[in-house]
Image (tube, rainbow, N blue to C red):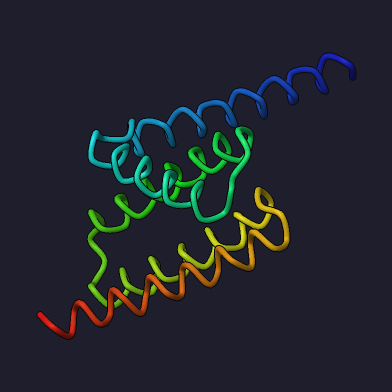
Length: 128
């Protein structure tokens, strides 16, 4: 019985590690452009939110993760409408996950900054 439980445990562990490795392969490493985008956003957020060193490290990881997911969505075979919906959901998820990194007041300001950025982007798109 102990052997059966051990074999089952090893099998499940092996399958989960294969899944994680496959995920790394599909997402790949961030490109120089993604790293530059993340660095610029991190500098801006550090300045606006007074991020600590630990928060900077966690934010870098989170921003890179979401930039890679967005890149993967953009490259997918989905329709433009579906891509927009998925990217919108991804952005909402990013805002929610940033709550784990930021303090309450920092997160409130982060949400305001995101809304402000969206308004600016919409205005720029309408001008062009």
